Length: 107
Image 1 (cartoon, rainbow, N blue to C red):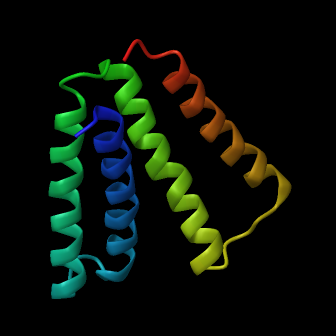
Image 2: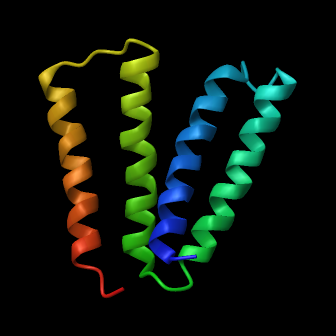
């Protein structure tokens, strides 16, 4: 598996476990909690796989950036959180930073 693909999948799973935390009700509901734990474990495993080839700082920033940007989008779409211009600009900056790191990566 390509390290960038593993990193992207790890980032998507970070979104999934953040979403799962919302539905676990403080880790008191079994199935949402179980799904959250599985997503966390898979996310960490894929991140570890990506770190075999990618620079640490770049991989970590992209992983957390995918999780942050994705969680913001999920919040806006599913939970009707605000979509004001400042949030959209900040989201755009997160994505631009990730793209910049990817384009500047030696791998």
